[in-house]
Image 1: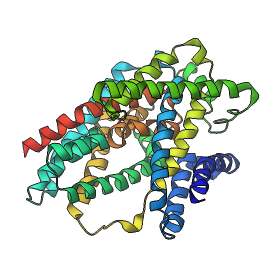
Image 2: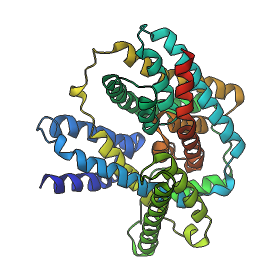
Image 3: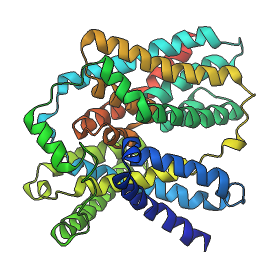
Length: 385
C-alpha cells in the first residue's frame, strides 16, 4: 500500500506543481523544480522519516531516480537543435570550470588541512567528484584507500551542500549572474524556438503532451528513448562488463540521442522535450524526498564540511570572474559549473530553470568530459600532497 501511494505521489505531484505555477505568478517565478524541491523536503522530514517509512521507500526512490533520468535524457536531447551548438565557447567554458575547481581545491587543502594522513585523500576525492561525479568519488575511494567513515561523511555532505548550491542557483543565483555577465546574443530563431517550446515564459510548457495531436508522437519519443537506453546499456555491458557504467552509459546515450535528433521524423516530435522535462520534475521530487536533515551530524568533521562548501561555492565564484574576463555568457558558465559540480544528469533541470534549452548540449558535454578526467585529477591532486 505504501509503495502504491509513494509512486502515485511521485508521478502526480509534478502535475500539481505545473498547475500551481500557472495559476500563481509568485510560484511561476520560483519554478516547478524549486517548488518540488520544497515539497520533497517537507514531505520527507515531516512525513516519511518521522513516521519511520523513509527506509521502506529507499528501493522505490532508487529505482525512480535512475529510471526517470535515463528516460528523460534522450527525450530532452531529441528536442534540441544541435546544428547551432557553439563548440568553441563550450570548450572554453569547460576549461574555465575545470581550472576553477582545481585551483580552489588545492587552495582549500592548505586552508582546511588538519595534518592527518586522510586529508590529501579528501582533496583527491573532492576534485574527483566536482569535476566528475559520484562514480568518480566511488572509484577514487578504492584508488586512494579512503577510510569508509570518511567516504560516507564526504558523500553525505556532498549531497547536502550540492543541493544547497542548486537551490541557490535556481532561486536567485541565475538572475544574479545574468546581471554580472553577458547573457549571450539571442537571435530571432533562438527566441522563436524558446517561445514555441514554452521555456521562455513558463506558461505553455508541458501543454498538449497527452492531446490527440501530440500523444502518438510523444509515445514514439518515449519508445525511442527506451530503445536508446537499452542499446546504451548494451554498449556499457560490452565495453565494461556492467550495464550501468555511468561514463560509458552517458557517452553512448548522448551520442545516440544526438544522432537520432537529426532524423526528420524525430524533429517532428514537438513535445518530446516537454515530456522529458516532466520526468526531470519527478526526479527532482524524488531526490528532495530522500534528504533527512535530522540524521546529519553537523558537528563532526567541521573542517571537511567547510572544505566541501569552499570548493563548491568558491569554484563558482572563480568561474564567474574568469568568465567575465573571457566574455563567456552567464548561462554557459552556470550550466558548465552545474555539470561539473552535480553531474550532467542535472543539466536539463538547470537549463529549464534558465528557460534556455540551447545550453543543454554544452552542459552534458562538459559533464561527460568531467567523468573522463575526474579520476586522473583526483590521483594527481592526492600525489601533490
